[in-house]
Amino acid sequence: MDKQKMDKQKVVKTYVTDKFFGKGHWFTKLWQTLVAILFWLGVAIPIYWTVSSTLLINNTHFLHAWRYQEGRTLFYFFDRFFIIAFIIIALVVVISTLHNNHRVKQHIEKDVQYDPERLAERKLKMEALYAERFGMAAMRTNIRHYTVTPEQNLKVNEIHDLYKTEDA
Image (cartoon, rainbow, N blue to C red; front, side):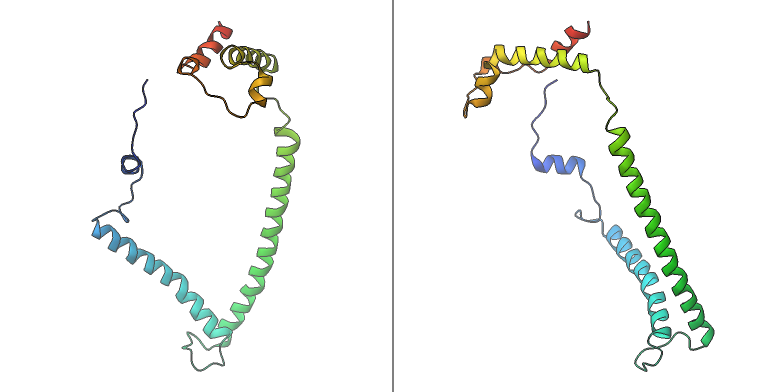
């Protein structure tokens, strides 16, 4: 199978599509911008109402959403609740992370996922192929510059075929 050379623009055009940043698509840009603004307002307005009506209650420069005591009591109740919930969630996350890291280091990494004998055979076959094509390993690792002639290049499926003969 021959691989075709593709220039960067063709690859980007083929695989990367985003209507928002592409040319045209004005309806998509307008719609996504309006939805983003509405959702950010949905985040900002309750925060403003809560902060202005509790922490900034004595500041007359802010419009207060409520001035009754029950709202402040409820806010401070939830304040304590969310602080306690955050601490509990943080502890659970840290403990779970440590437990998972322990499992990965002590159990998963130690399980051998391959056949060591077969791997040794494959390494020997690869070393023999490299020694035949490019010279002995000591020469290959100690040389600074080496030019490969076209005849020495590996064929497309040569290593795959080498492993096939091992399996057969």
